[in-house]
Length: 454
Image (cartoon, rainbow, N blue to C red):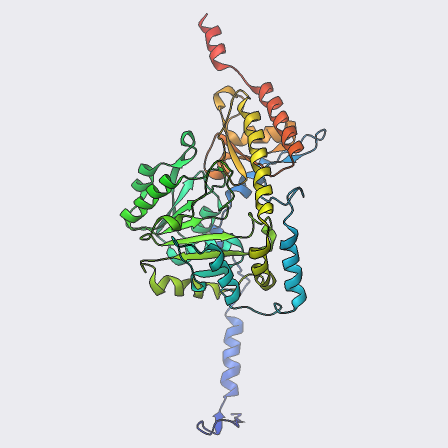
């Protein structure tokens, strides 16, 4: 037997010598067994990866259609305001990033929940008497999507269920189902500007309901809930003791004819995790800076949820430190004119698009009030050659090179979504092509039926 002695110099309270005896023969035997234990390669994807399903990607990839080569492609499908270059962020925002980079202070690791000074800045920016915030109530994340993921992960266990809107942002379902969490879809009502069907919502709640997701302003609807409607949503949550995950990434991105109400300002007794970020309001989605605001004035979450969120952030080391270093200047120096100009452009485009599409027989657009989208209903009975909204959207690409996401991507068939961030001239051209497409394929079924009756 071979023996080794390791001499350790250090704390006098510890043994000065540690004898480690290794039986080399035994070691070789163990290694031999380990080598023989795996007869062949058997690398398999994890169950979680197999459960991960992005409906938008799956539907779009399955469409397999080429745009009309004689027409330039106009994409009204991507929720990225930077794609066409017509909506740049403000110069103060980019200067803040340059200053943070040049300072050399933000090249190392930050705490997993973000720098204290950066969290203080976010807390100060969103703090108000109706919903007070301190730095301890803020967790910085890699974009709003990670904020949503962390919030879902801390609130729900496999086997529980969450309530999400229909139509709604597909990421909620993608994340939940990958974690073994059941999804229940509550209906939004297009005839009521996409308000929640509150009776349907409440009927879905059971003892396994972990949280309710409220997205306001909405993707894909472009709707903005009134204060009265938000209070009714909170009443359901309070009555059923269900916490709320508020996706408010489009907060303050509302048009001049309505007002955005942060959900947490309207309730003291419903615990809320509000998710937001820089992506949309500051037009920098690629910078991946999001946050969770913890509103828990009745201490219902207590330390458990807060501690759970901190532990979950420790799986990775938080968002980009340079963006964190720039937050103070971004929040304080971005001029109001920048926000105003962005919203003026979006409202103008929304009005233009809504007006043009509302005049087309067979289409029923729903007027948006904020965010960057509008939903358009398709009266499928007037387009009998198309089986569904996916086929309608597919043929629109093939014939007119206009790309819209079919409603199926948002669990809402017979609709399609339009992104309103494209340049005005492009929006006009897209609407013109959609009109041409609909006029070609529209059939007046009532007139056809009258002819048959004769």
